[in-house]
Image (cartoon, rainbow, N blue to C red; front, side, top):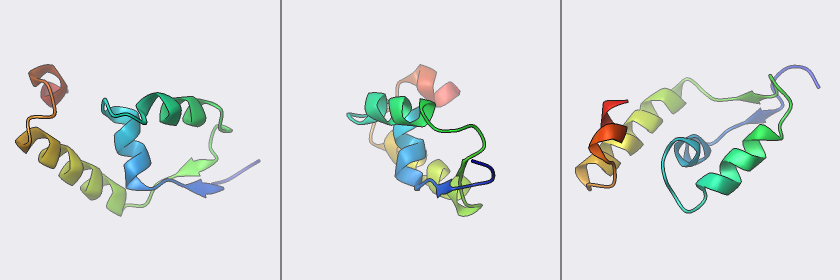
Length: 68
């Protein structure tokens, strides 16, 4: 494969970066994808930041996780 074949939803990015029930399965799936075949939209940056902001306000992130 060449080029972007799959555009990731923000929920996939968040699950890969946060400790969620689907995190292990998400990371496993991501690791099996062809390098360069995945993409995200420009909006994903804003949506991921918003998702982590909500998690921080709810107390769902450790202080260490908030610092990174």
